[in-house]
Length: 392
Length: 141
Ligand SMILES: [Zn+2]
Image 1 (cartoon, rainbow over the protein chains, first blue to last red):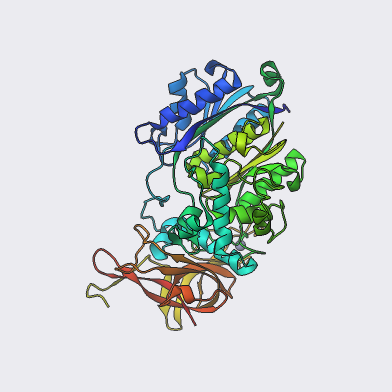
Image 2 (cartoon, each protein chain N blue to C red):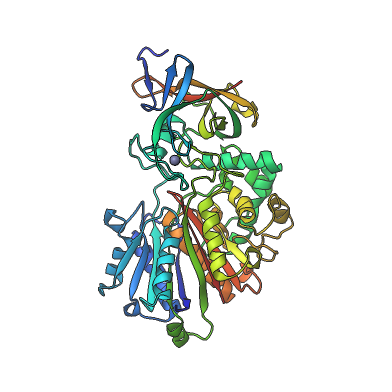
């Protein structure tokens, strides 16, 4: 098996770009990843793309084909991966596997999305067999309400307060303000967050991530190829994808079996555990993590669920500054989804770019000091989960 | 009651039985796993023979969490007009099922997590044709 290097990282900043086509922002990300890797487009042997739900891809999620046409139709194989908001990470996993197995030497992984306005909507189909449709029709629980339900359960169990929740958002912007690729870079006080509109009690507007447009790309290659280009490559130590278990107690439609323990995203827990196992490290050996913070709740719950810290400990670590880049358990030094907004299928790749830049020490005021090993994690509709661990 | 009558939010999910309101689902005869709504196949990875039979659930459970819906959701959600914040409860039934549903409560902010709730079939609001749209809801007892 070949070692896999992450040779180049590229991003188009996250924001709202009504005047740009999806192809344009993807090309910016791809061209900067190629330049960062020091290679030409013609050296790419295959493309693994996140399959878009909302934009581009000829209406069929064929986003990788759009990218290849714009960059030059070299005849390379294209894999369009569909996994909801975990699609970028799934594409990374497939690209990694191709290099690892020796099928290809140089692979481009890319994800881009232009989002419709407002919170992420349902499929729009009035399909009585679609659990998402039934949930909105018969109950009325959009995404923020789902997160609110998880958050309230935590408040009941651990005594988490509304001020604790707001402090997570304050910390995200304290860090994200230094990230030129982030969309929401203003600094918030605790009062600013607590004064923002209640969206779904106990969650407020500044505690959940809105939608954005964005694109990111990564060049993966074999160790042999990497050594021709650099003396200090970033290595992809492992990647893992998973789907949700039957008994995790999380009702993704109208109901579920309660299972053991508290409701949790088993697809996240399983993919993270597998990525750690493959990398041969324990959770506490990670120098930092980029995790999917659609809402502040996840920044409190996920580290506990994965063994980065003890159950119920997250609030104390947050207030002690341990989740800042300079702390003992840095979370989302990029600013996370709260500062980027969600460009769904591209999210997993902005996270991986951040992990790579952190490992190179290129992150300036948001740098995790002496970062040697970091993880990116995302989840998506359908119970998809993915994690990737990079090291230097 | 609306002059235009009533309509179920979706067909085949709930019923007013002689014993009272019930959710209509299924249960695997092999591993006893309950499902709501009805499922065509058993999702339990340990189950060796998916054998789905119709079953009913309710009428009582315990609230394990609550979310409030502070803004009016877009269609297809039905809500009162003018809009009033409603609660959604996550409820564990003794039959081994965890089910979401709207809370039927005057002041959803005052409903305690951990309390008992009863299944009721009640209007969510009116649809564009002026019909009362009925669904299962959880009423604190
Ligand atoms: Zn079964």
